[in-house]
Image 1 (cartoon, chains in turn blue, green, cyan, brown):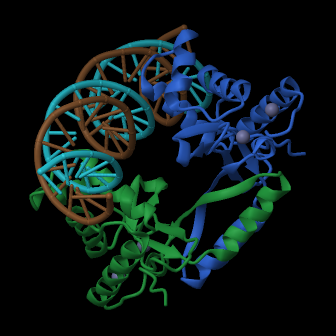
Image 2: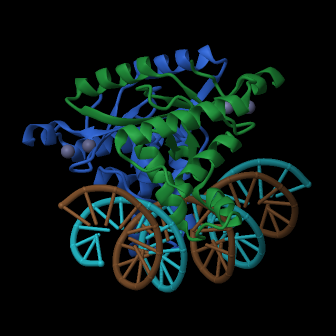
Image 3: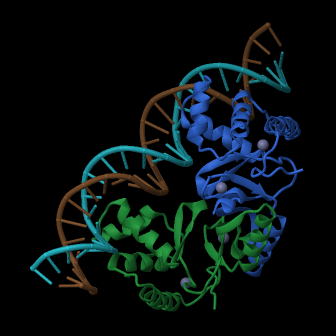
Length: 158
Length: 158
DNA sequence: CTTGACCTGTTATGATATTACATACATAAG
DNA sequence: CTTATGTATGTAATATCATAACAGGTCAAG
Ligand SMILES: [Zn+2]
Ligand SMILES: [Zn+2]
Ligand SMILES: [Zn+2]
Ligand SMILES: [Zn+2]
């Protein structure tokens, strides 16, 4: 079940679940969830927000890992490739995937007020996009769907 | 009528049309299409591809305009605000809008093979996105819809 | 004119991302 | 057990993208 970031939830629990799924997924893919990679995913899950590569790097340095940008970028790229994290281009940032493994085509909802980022199920959006692309003979392989607006809390305030 | 970048077309003609529309639009908005701004739009139209700010700047320098990044970024920002250009976040690049003025919510189709970028009409995509966001109580204000894949020509080759 | 809004030029710096190379580790063949 | 191979990590250097801050110029309204 999907737990939108906008709702309150037992975060320790959801983090644990995701880490367990991450283990399974990487093992199934024949990939290795090494200490840096695992730690980066944990950091993204703990913070539960979109983080820049350099933010992640700062955390890694504090824990004794390498302190050069490629350390962070490589781990993040790995996680994205494995479907364990997503890149939010609008923010030049990365965020842990809350529903890894489930074939999902998420859209990102970014609150311009409080900077919360939520992953929304977007099968319908993707279908519409593929249809629009097909009109022009274009074949979609990947897509970035990112919306800027107001989250429920900030809508309520306004 | 929308002329997808993927099709052959009379480009001089479409450039002229767009410039004329740009004049109207800025006048209607009480904004000024100054020499730098006009020239940047012309450059984007001539190149007919997504260009980085520094690519644009290089062209400007060659023509005697200021040679510092803000010169390009400011003109580009102006064009985006006026709806005369779009920013393609996936490419850190900008592209002229081929159908300015028409209230449109474009999606961008980016060919990973030949780097062509086309603007596709995406009312349906946007509607689906707003519906998905509404499920979570999120109100969409703007959205970036960017697809990576293969354009018709490159599909044919493969 | 003079004023005020806006535009342009320039310096400086900040933020994001990659290339290239060296070293270390895991795994499997010999 | 040793060696070869692929993969992962550490590090330096550099490339690329973007903005802040201020100075001077242009232009139209009053
Ligand atoms: Zn959570
Ligand atoms: Zn909010
Ligand atoms: Zn054209
Ligand atoms: Zn192509």
